[in-house]
Image 1 (cartoon, rainbow, N blue to C red):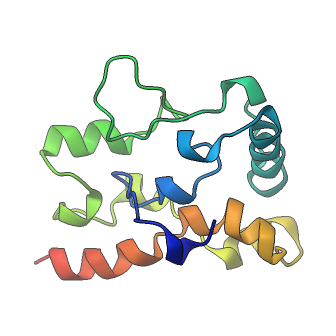
Image 2 (image 1 turned 180 degrees about the horizontal axis):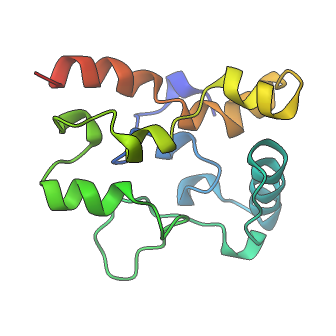
Length: 141
């Protein structure tokens, strides 16, 4: 899947659900779940059991919706503030938002090596908020 070939599904924080390895549309076999678990451990230092990896996204309001990060501080904040995404919030860039910021440089510094292109596509790009940064600049007064 190429980032140019999909309609972006933007999480409340600006992450790209459609590019995330945990998003339900990207899980086709148990191997996909294992790859996500291994990649997150390699690049971010946390492991989620593969069988628990399948996310409906934070904008899915169904009571049975699966969320990969049930402790995310951004979803309840956006709901309380009545905004769809942080880009619409006058406090965008707050500590909650900053705590979830990912860049390729940050990941490469963390692991002490370059991130290969395929791993970048799966484990960094979905969380960089590239499209979201431009949206934030347009929507924030």
